[in-house]
Length: 243
Image (cartoon, rainbow, N blue to C red; front, side, top):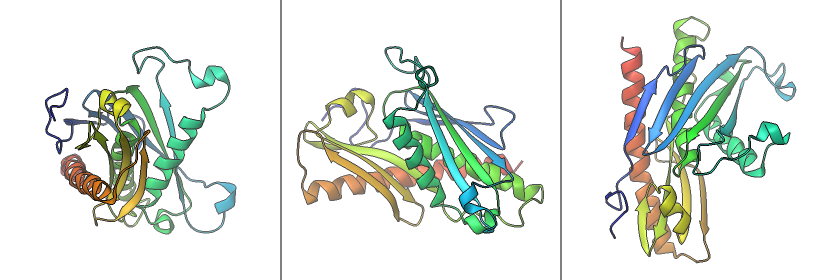
C-alpha cells in the first residue's frame, strides 16, 4: 500500500516538540504530529474537587478544545454555543483517565493538575496527540514542583503515550492522518505506558468487521509507535531538566 504522504505502513508521522511554548504554566509544550498541532499546558492549584477533600490525594483533569479554523472549514466555538459537544466531553474524559494512570495521586497531595489541550491545527489523531503532549506537560510540572521543594518526590509512575492505528484499504497502518482516518475500515486509538501495559483501547469497525488476527496486528503496530513516542518524551524531558 502506498500512503499519501509516502510513509511505510508501520511508520509514524514526524513528531516535533516545542517546550515552554507559553511562559506562565507549570508545564507547556506545543506538540506537532505531522500537520496536527496541539498546545498542551499543565496548571497546578493547591485544592481538589469536593469529593476528594481531606483524603490526602490529588486529582488530574483535562480540558480539550479545537480552534474554529483548525480544520478545513470554520467550526463555531463551543463557548458561543453555550455548551460542550459530546465529542469534546468524551475526549476530555479520555485524556484525564489516561494521565491519571501514570501518577501516584497520594504523592501529589491535595492538588489538582489541569491539562489543557488546545488544537490549533487538526489532521487526524488530535486526542492521541493531546495525550502524548499532555504527559510531557504533566511531567515538566511535577519536576518543577520537586525542584521548588513543593513535592519531596516525583509522583509520576510511568510514561504514557497514545497513537492511532487502523485498517485502510485492507492494510493495517500506523498513525492515521485525516484522509486515512476518514476512509478506514477499522479505526483504533491505543494508550499504553512504558511497561507495555494498556491504559485504554478504543477500536471500532467502520461499516466493517475485523478479525482477531487483524486486532493483533494493529496492537503490535500501536506498541511499536507508542514506544517510539515514549523515547521522544524522555529525550525532551531530559533535555529540559539537564540544563
